[in-house]
Amino acid sequence: MTRGQYFLLLAVVFLGNVVGSALTGIIFDSSSAGAEKAKGINAEEFLLLDSSGKARAGLGLDPQGEVGFILTSRDGSKKLALSPDEPLAIKLSDRSGRVLWSAP
Image (cartoon, rainbow, N blue to C red; front, side, top):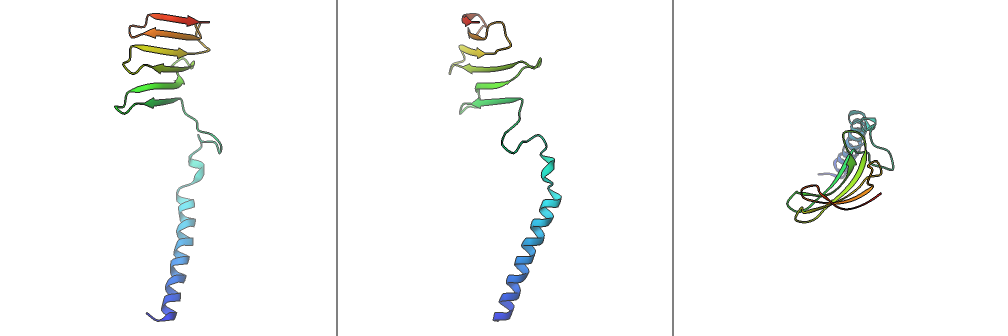
C-alpha cells in the first residue's frame, strides 16, 4: 500500500465514522427515552434480589399508588415494611402476616 492509498483509507474511515454517528443520532432519537430525566431514573418499583433471584428488598408503589419500602429476612420469616400511606407507618410481621411490632 502506498502512502497516498494509506491517507485515502484514513480519510474514508474518518468520513464513515462521521456519517455513521450522524445517522445513529437520527435513527436512535434521544427523545424516545422520554421517561428518563437527565439526572434521575424513573420507575414504579425497585427490587434488590439475592443470588437465587428472590426479592429481599423493594421500594415501589402498590396498585392504589401508595409508596412503600419492604425488607425481607433471608429465610422469608420476617418482613419489615415502611409506608407513610398506611395507618401503621412501620410494621414488622411474620410469614403469615401477623404483626409482631408496629409504630404509627
